[in-house]
Image 1 (cartoon, rainbow, N blue to C red):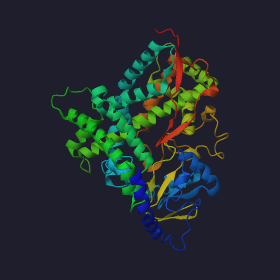
Image 2 (cartoon, rainbow, N blue to C red):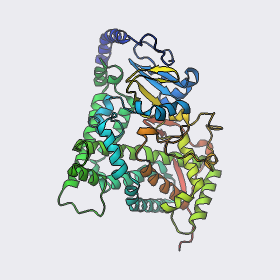
Image 3 (spheres, rainbow, N blue to C red):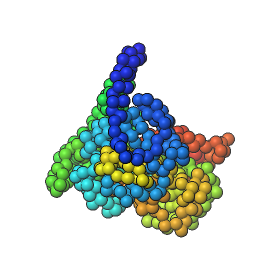
Image 4 (cartoon, one colour):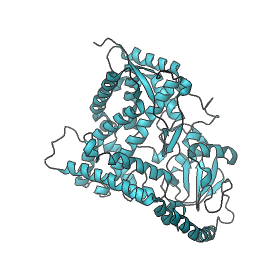
Length: 501
């Protein structure tokens, strides 16, 4: 610690000089967006706090729907209204759909060979096409339905066996999501020693933390690598990547083993290896490309699906009236079948409305991954220079009081007879992004989330633990690319008695 203090004191004057020297041109005649006053060197970093989506939403009320926050030497633009979101995600999407070459994502994505963080270019266009036609097409999603049905049945059975003891739904939902994704992507569920005694789980958490905490090199290009080294950021991200890479090597080698039992259906690794052998891609697919795609799938399984279900069940637990209404709809439609089939979901309109409302209040990525402009442009009359980072604040957009009455309240009825869907075509509501960078896994994600939630609501009545009231449910958030529920959701399951055929 003493060494760190000495190094900081030694280098701080030089850092200040370099930063001041770098503050040259905003260019005469440039009209830049407004910005809160910042501090020397760090700019507005101290104002972001632990929940940046909420902080930015508050700051925008004073500084406007397009504003700049300075992170070290780096200006970052935030937009917070549906009108400006439409500008970024639709009207100027072609010029604002690249990604900044950040150091953390560069390492984690095998030097930008993934989907999420790869800058706009030939490989990104090719992998989007592969996702649409091969990996995440409706036909591919349908082919994995048996996996989802088997895992849901096992989950319901496991909860029934422990009833009426309280259940950690956060853990249950994370577990089933991981199992479904693992079987879909890797061909089987990996656990225990197959996961290097928990090192992969630890690696995934480290990756998310590293991506959230950013690399100082991104904001202090001249000096950031020293800060990263001294704070342990570099060691953490290298360790996380090493553990994740070991797992990917293991599952790829297993798929290449000629003695491997021939599967009935291709999993995602099989498809990628087939495309690699066929050499039909415009960009030759390497092992690192395969690993980059698997990284996206793995992080999505931990982050998006499980968390969305936790927030949906949390909101229903806080609103018993809505819980009873949605259960009545599901049980009335499904009858005594004993389970909800995926084909039933489309007819469960109020159930779908509750999920949409939960995603409005708790979007999986409340601040969309940073985009980067590819030339000079304008937003709301302000000049946005080339290579500027832009974040769209989905959290603020989906709570805009001009579009949503009582925006902070949970009111699923607002989505009844409402044409807004989850596919990013409405710029007051796009929980999975929009435009060229829309999440390619929406179909797969919903195919996992909807039947799991519907079966939980059909199979059980959910009560609060003894002595707990609705007001006691903790709604605190923690930000880690996605917004997690800070404390686990604990509920008591009471099996629903239905007469099965």
